[in-house]
Image (cartoon, rainbow, N blue to C red):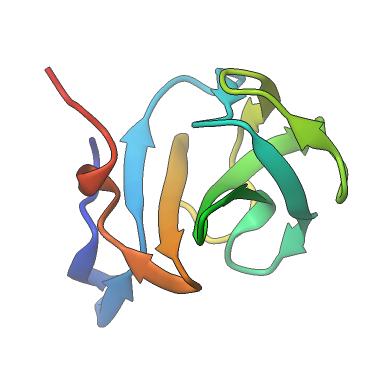
Length: 117
């Protein structure tokens, strides 16, 4: 993990980081956390290429800074399905996956959902 959720200094300015950053090589496959429906698959000035998946029950996950997006809005994805590849799009200083979890539209700490060795 290269950056936690929470306040940090980014380019000399205090910033609230909405997710976690997982450092990995460019081109690494980005896989869906769980099955669901793609509600956004677009480009954003900060997120770059990103995908937002609604998993039902008020839970959604977001995957950002991808070099490409392999799914479209309205697509149904399965857990572990590739949705894109790690890239350098948007506001980024190096290859990583920005990962967010939202509960009922509010950002929560992704560590509540992921297990790290």
